[in-house]
Length: 104
Image 1 (cartoon, rainbow, N blue to C red):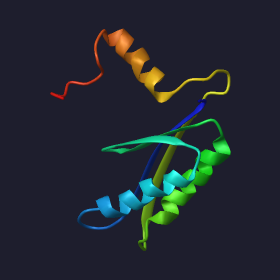
Image 2: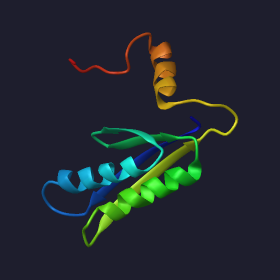
Image 3: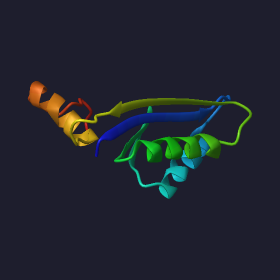
């Protein structure tokens, strides 16, 4: 895959946003993307930049509030295929260990 992105979609509200964020994540299912949600956003991988933009728009529109904040950061590596896991593995190679310090 050549396009990797970090998508963060959230309503601007007080209290828990998890229900609305779940709607945004669920909207990604209609698109040809792979994704993994983490505490700060959702990493999306796809071969097609247009598919990424469509998926991000659907996630944004799935949040039903008067004000929605969306951030999309894209790594569009056009000269070779890569994926998110390979990017993490490269960092771990330099560290000589997993790139985490959690007890999991």
